[in-house]
Length: 357
Image (cartoon, rainbow, N blue to C red):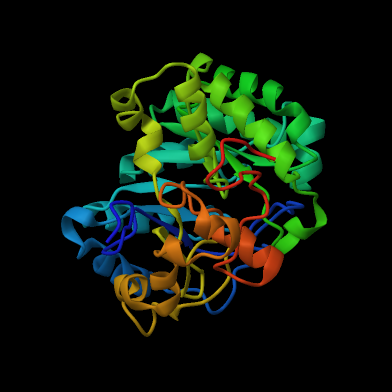
């Protein structure tokens, strides 16, 4: 077993409590709708799943309640309390709408939510609202961020990275700093759901953006991470070595804690209807929690087991000397080629060389 293989339990479970949402984001992975579906897991079913996740004990995952908009579930506060009571860490990823009031934020804190995240896809209302599809969302996001930080809840800002948003990332980073966020997570576009309408970066553009990110991270007052761009770990390692950082320093950095995490390895996604997939961006169903325990699906499903063996990946990903710490985006490989074990086309690296494209 690889030291970077999370075969007993995921580190993080992203749980789409509902696909309902009042926004109409152009890049929505869930292709969210206005109203809740009739096949959503019930409160009792959700509690059963939480109990099963908690059974992992010391390796129990951190649960991120997301959507759609989890605030569309009237039992959200109850489910946060239920998860915390079972010893699970909980974060909440709501949509920035008038539902996210000061009272709701404090109720989530009192229930035990350890962190919250908000999406911010540009430095101005024109940029952000244009992607979110609802006029005023930018202002709601800024107000919610102030309330979350004011309540003492660590805030993560999520930003889409695509051809449309990349030119404004420096300005967005400055805004993230002003909002006093604890973390900035950059979501590199995967062409699924409504995201097919946007243009992803080319591999060369992605490499340039990741190097800018790695070189800039030290000057920002927040931690930086990426979603569906695990090659950031390789780029950050290169930049650290260029800067003369020692091996021990690199191994104790926040970067090292993410080694190996990718779709299906350290990450699991539960859909609103109970379907389990390797991530929200990789819609290949490995089982359903209504029929099978969530951890059993994660541990035993053939799809998950395959995703934990990077030596079996195809193309450059399988041959790459960084395959254990990175492994490429499995979701993007599938979206681009139909092969979940194929190479990630967003990576510019040439395996066993010292250069990128």
